[in-house]
Image (cartoon, rainbow, N blue to C red):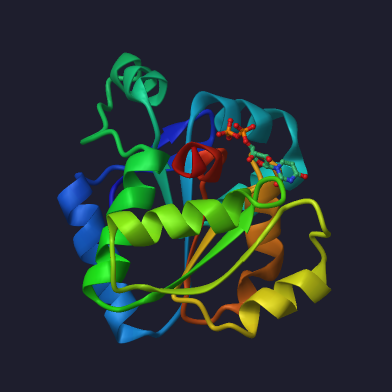
Length: 194
Ligand code: UDP
């Protein structure tokens, strides 16, 4: 699919509709996991200055334009991107999809009690999905924690550790989730729990 390079990061040039069609198609064929980065200017700038973070971000299957800064940059480069796709919107779109298709979700990140409260609020907003589990982001980020999360076999893994931690974590451990959609959601659990 078509991409636009912004500071050496390939941003996917897809409308939200086309993007979702691809994701849901790949999800139903269950052939591989899908790592999505919602790229805002902070992520692009951090990747510019940190080669190791850049390597993590480049492992994503889709890097979508999260916000008007990226959209504007694409216009200035005379390669306008199709549509802005923000992380918080995408988070809710996937929760609604999980609810419709009885998929399981995992919330990993934020302070003690936040992810679990966010998951309960998500259940009130969208019924029918199963919460595979929740875990705060301050009791370890290593392989043992990743294995614990992977054992619950979630269809969607939402990682709220903020950038750059969340993309690094997903890049390091996505091999443990062969069929999941994995996405960093920044402070979204804080918002949804409030
Ligand atoms: N966080 C975490 N573990 C850490 C560092 C951060 O769980 O070691 C969480 C933090 O509690 C917050 C989120 O990561 O919920 C980062 O939120 P922020 O608003 O900084 O992210 P942004 O939305 O700006 O990417």
